[in-house]
Figure 1 (cartoon, rainbow, N blue to C red):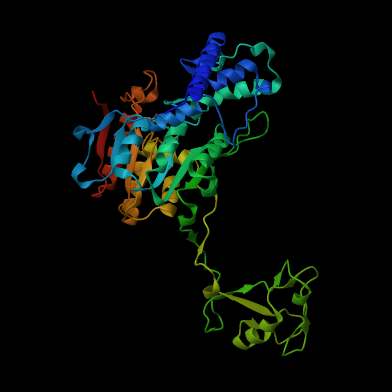
Figure 2: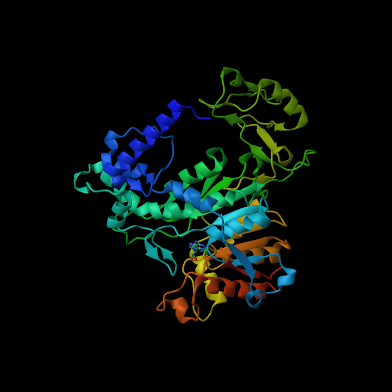
Length: 481
Ligand SMILES: C[S@@+](CC[C@H](N)C(=O)[O-])C[C@H]1O[C@@H](n2cnc3c(N)ncnc32)[C@H](O)[C@@H]1O
């Protein structure tokens, strides 16, 4: 039981807290003291904030809460929009992905191998879907309860301006990223498309959610060609795709095929195909600058100045006997060192972080083929890009989840992969029923929302594949009353 002294202390504290609220009501949000408002009121210089290293923004705590709040909806099957539903594990889910991700946890916890995230980039534009999360200055300042804007210094001014641009987007994406983590298998991976608008913020946020130690890398996707009409004579021709693993130690790429066409075996060497190897290296020490004597001509060889033999002295005798080193019968010619194919550490080469063979326009071209009557969606991702990535990181029976499906390029890519590779990969695509503007090209083509476009593409692409696993089950979120 609390003693009298502690009761008195707690009473005194409550009284002081009430007093604070009476004097400074503007730094309270209902009954709660809002630390951001207090900070804005007293000015950052008068505030000691020993925060941890992190990216912070207004309402970040609420964004974390949003991920924890229970979803009071359920997924309802829509038969009319489904195709070959009894043969398919593919899902298309209409709804806000914040709710859908929560509901998916019931059946797909630790079941998804790859999550693809292609969110609105926050460019401030409209592409048929809204890509503008910027706040009006007056709304943002009201958020912060910032009254002394006339007196801020340049640094604070920059923070305010950046806050207006990024706050809403960060609050949108943060809880959704948090929710993806539980869905990944222990070997799972998240790929996130983004451009310069939010790349810096996104990476810091992902470090916080998945752990910096699970940052695998970042693809640079060269999606455009240089624009010569830029007044600054600078042209950004790429986007990014961030890669985070659930556990980086478990993640392995398949790599790409090496070209062995220059390997051959003209001398019938019992060790098989080989290519001439460089016998010298850029680094070494004085022990690796020994003379090598040609046993036939007695000519002496030394590595060129500043270079070293790439092997130790003891190897020369052994490799001369085995035929790995071949000496010429005349002076003035270099000896030959063979590199055998069987000595290679891997028959495959590493997958490059720069992707430059798939232009962004390819996505639009694909839609043109599928929609001769007119293209209903701007800037879809090319299926070739998705296939290239999915192929590296998924296996035959894996599930791929696309959190911001748009025109359902992911579903199309999976259908193609299954047809071409005979695999049975499955997709889950989430798209909200974001309405289209009545003057938009897609609306004029007969679509009223983006999910309409997506399911139509899935159905058209599925028909083209005509494989048994090209069906889809359509679900939508309905509120529980
Ligand atoms: C960049 S686009 C995705 C494009 C897609 N990768 C493609 O190739 O067609 C982002 C999509 O996310 C959708 N979106 C935005 N907010 C959403 C939300 N809360 N839930 C579900 N979808 C959302 C937008 O309507 C838009 O279609």
